[in-house]
Image (tube, rainbow, N blue to C red; front, side, top):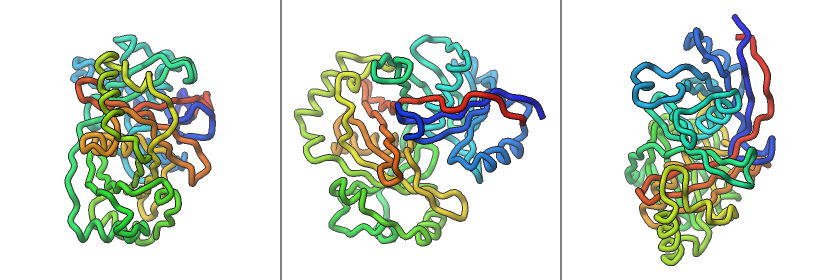
Length: 325
């Protein structure tokens, strides 16, 4: 074992301890998969990451560093809050990207671009946003939709749409009628623990879009702003308020149990791609997540002029030190 630099950061919040915590081992060289998994189990956080040099192939393609992402029970191919949190920790530790306004991260799903955009309200004066990975989605069968809705405690009249969503993790999303439905849910966790593995799903979430948020005038205005401020990290979200207009909750499998996640980047990414594409949400919005857990997660979504969806959030460092590993 040796002493390695370590940070614990809070993601999707500008206020410490009101977001989603992430453990980051800034030097994962020489660690086996088993050692990484064991340490992730010990931290008991939803994810722990280990930073490594990029592989030669990824470096040739522009990667600045490589990240391995571990939940307590398994390795993940991609996850949103570990992407932003790891990038923040890498920059805080002195990492210098090849391009000043953009960091390129290597993970199991490939290369992920992360923008660095000046933002006065963000810690350090900048906000990070990752390019949402390609999404594969499909409509569920009536049987799957009904079973999952029943486990969540949703009634058919409350459901506006549903989709299987895959951007690395296999997720399932419901669009429901209003924020009150999202916040009032009391899911049957035992039923979810049985159904998610049965349907090959690692996480299940739902969202509600505030009435009028996807009005045609707003969509048109946002598209014009996106064209005016086009380019990596220069987005319409900079011109729009941070007040949430979408409410989100997400439940995921930790192995034998189901847990509610404080704030979820990967699910918000896939939901945004679906909702924007189908006209359920505007191309730029802020989502609130974690209210039922006493946190104040904020996920800033925007679609640029090329159609790429960016998922942004603030990150703050809460612990900065060393770990013996």
